[in-house]
Amino acid sequence: MRSLLPVFFLALTACPGDDDVVNPSGDCEAEHDGSFVCYSTPGPDDTWLPDCDAPLDRELWRVFQQADGTAYMIPRPDAMGLETGICDGDDAELAALFEANGLCDAMLDQAGVTLINSMDPADALTISHALHESLEFAAVEYSDGTGGVTPFAPPEDWVDACDGAADSSGICDKINEWYDLDSGDCPNLAAVFSAEEATALAALLNDLYGV
Image (cartoon, rainbow, N blue to C red; front, side):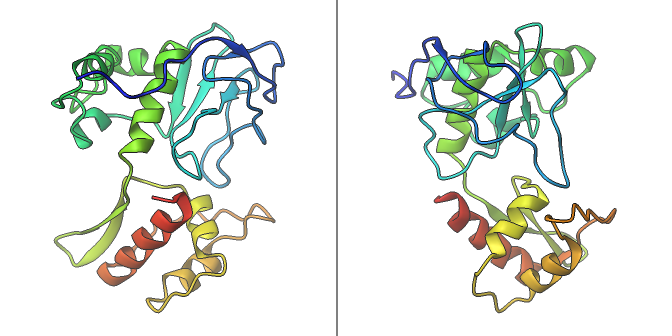
C-alpha cells in the first residue's frame, strides 16, 4: 500500500530565526519561534519548520531544524510508531521511515536519543504529518484512581482548549488557576486529574486540534 502522505520538496520559508532555512513542506510562514509556553523553547539557532500541509488545526509535534541541518521534534516522539500502530501497519514505506529514525523502539538508548534528535528535516516533517493524521487524545485511568491524557499535550494547549469552553468537570477551573500564560506564570507542579477531569480534557483537546 502506497503512502498517501505528501512528498516534501524543498521550498524557501520565512521562519523566525533564519530566513535562509529551507522548509521541505512548502513556503508557509511560522507564526512564532515554535515555543510552547510553560513547556519548551527552541535553541537560539533552531528554526521551526511548520507543516505547510498540516492535517489538523494545530501542530503538537513541531519540527525544528538545527544549525547543522538536522532536525528534532518537540515533544520528542519516543515510541510513537508503536503507539500509533504505524510500525506494524500496512504502509511499509512509512513503517521503514519510523524504524530508521528510532520511533519503533519501546526504549531508547543513547544512540537512539542521538538518532531521534538529528533527523533529516524532510523525514521529520513526514513523520510529524503521519502522527497528526493519527492523533486522537484519550483519557487514561491509573491504578490509584487518578487520570491523565495521552498523548501528552503541553499546558499551553490545556489553557487554549479551556478558552470559552463549557466544562462541567471542573478541570478548566484548575487549569486557569495553575497557569497565567500572559504573565509567564508557570507553576512547578505535577498536574493531577481525576478520571472525570481527564476525560473532559481529552475531549476539549480533540476539539482544539480539530480531530
